[in-house]
Length: 507
Ligand code: HEM
Ligand SMILES: *[C@@H]1O[C@H](CO)[C@@H](O)[C@H](O)[C@H]1NC(C)=O
Ligand SMILES: CC(=O)N[C@H]1CO[C@H](CO)[C@@H](O)[C@@H]1O
Image (cartoon, rainbow, N blue to C red; front, side, top):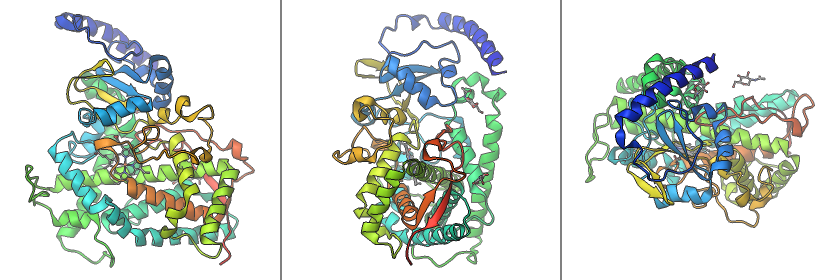
């Protein structure tokens, strides 16, 4: 089926490329040197080479063509960046030029024509929204304010796992991690838990998948109306679902119904936002003022939900998977936790700064399993020459963080191995200063939610490893644990993670 489609496209492509060549006579005169890369087919370009796990296919292609590689995704000229040195050129040296985002179908639907943050083009609207989200949700001091939320949710999870442990039952870790992240993030974003009425998770999983897949319509515009892969239909369904939820929340707020709200020690993001409905969000700035309407609120909320739920849950799942696969590392981590907190109490957030081995474990997990393997696509805003190569305006830039984490030149011959001790004598950090390890991206478009994501990840891992001993179910040995990836904008496990807990604290 898909091969017939491909054949059809190739035939069509050959035809169209003839027309194309005749229409643009100066095509051949343009001798500016593009980065090297595999030869594209007409129309589909190199899309057919991406397969089910594009980050891996691109990793292998880059071995042949180099760390700055040029490919064609349909009609879209795309640069794939696959080494720390190259990443530095694109994300630091020439950051301004590459700080925009391409228009993609999924963002158009999910964030009302890119009125949100993550998929919005570079410019003053983006800058305003970003500053505003940092101020009210993502700054270090805000993240600190939300500590009681994390503590309460963590407490309930430990209770639940204790019951499972006492009953000798297997725990669906993927499910539990998904639920606690949803609870924590819903409370900080919306000020309340949603789980009773609303099922966010399937909507968000779908959104992430749809935002990440390299679907034909984005790259071959004339095919878009046919919606060959049914993506548009799914996108509509997903975005309608999310927007219905947000509309309901905004309506409730406008009617002033307070009955469902709990007493809180902090102001959540949603309430700051709706209190500003129909007012400019940057009133005393020299920049052009932006009135924040319902569409903007819904778009920004979509972005916050999409950017926080799946990413954090995926990071925790992979870290936990690696710990289960490496009992030696699990034991060392338990030892560190015990030396800091003893065996009579749970971990507190104030313990986190002392946990240096935990830090190494998490870095190592992000190195091998960057949650967004190709970051989020960037787009260039002007023609530019980088490292002697010509890169035309409106090129799409994919930074292969997955590939950079496996670069033998940086990580030596054991790059494929999960070995946290490699960070013992190195000061490589994951916050974006060291281009060898950029799970959060870096520069103007780097992740503004890093603090929130990291704090949550570290607390949950530390607590679950401190309070419980873990074993794989059904006599699966650590080496046998399935680690298959499922590609999308995020890269979650393909299969759920299951494990058997045993309570190990004394109290
Ligand atoms: C472990 C968790 C997380 C990881 C690994 C992660 C990773 C990333 C990455 C790789 C990018 C793209 C950077 C680039 O394009 O260069 C990004 C962007 C973004 N992240 Fe995160 N993220 C995480 C958690 C969060 C959280 C909790 C939020 C909170 C809402 C968040 C909000 C965002 C936003 C809004 C953007 C888009 C920024 C822009 O385009 O200006 N992230 N994140
Ligand atoms: C684990 O939970 C997920 C939902 O989060 C569910 O889809 C899956 O079937 C569960 N797996 C098992 C083996 O119970
Ligand atoms: C190039 C291409 O077709 N990429 C993906 C688009 O989306 C479908 C799923 O809807 C994937 O199967 C394709 O691989």
